[in-house]
Every structure is written in C-alpha cells, then in structure tokens.
Image 1 (cartoon, rainbow, N blue to C red):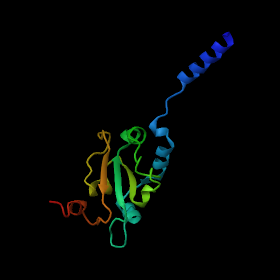
Image 2: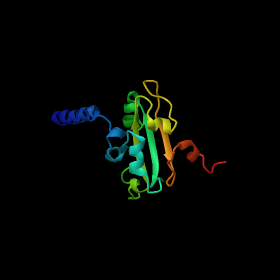
Image 3: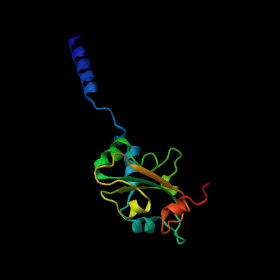
Image 4: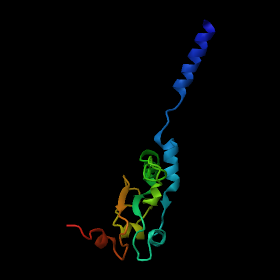
Length: 150
C-alpha cells in the first residue's frame, strides 16, 4: 500500500542520514582516553611513576605531540586506545602499563630528557616511546635506555 511504501521510504532515508560510528566515539576509546595521564614536567613524571630506588613501577607508554597535531593523536590515532582502560581479558591496563600524553609547544625538560626533536608547528606526527618497568630514570635517559643492549 501507499502508506507502507511511504513509511519504508522514510525509514531508509533516516538510515542513510545517520553518521557512521567513528572509532573515537566508541565507549572503549573514551574510557581509555579518560585514563591517560597528562604530564607537563620531568619532576611530575618521576613523582607519579618512580619507586624509592628511582625505577619505574610499571611499563610506560609516552606520546609526545604539539598542539597542531593534537586532533590527529586524539581523533585519528585515538591514543592511548587500546592500551588503557579494561582489556578484553578483563585486566586493567594501568596495572601493567601507564599511558602518558605529553603535549608541548616548545622543547622542555621532558623533551630534552627523552631526546624528542620538534616543537612549534613543524611536528607532523607524534613520537611514541615505550620504557620498561624497572628502568632507572636517572640524570640522562640515553645511558639507561641503551643499558644492556648490544
């Protein structure tokens, strides 16, 4: 009948108008992004992450980025998903791995310590850095990072 056709047509029009669900809008992504630590200084990072022997209490995943690529990091890469929040195995990632965002415009003590180049509007991609649990965050990072490597 005519009314049935009109109703079906209206339904399909509404379906077509719906926007697809973007990864950044999923619950798991929002949960992960709400759990990332935003760190602004080396002292803050040390206070949060080091044990009494100045070693990392957990593995660390750092993301360095400048304001001009913040949307890329948050909306496209959706950092720190899937490495924060609840894992599919029902384990809180933060029990094993701490994710950290470091948003900077000019170089600072964190970028110098971890030897991150960039700053200003010249940065076109974030820099990710993984640091193992137990790593000594001493005076310089390079010496500790290469410790034991061949």
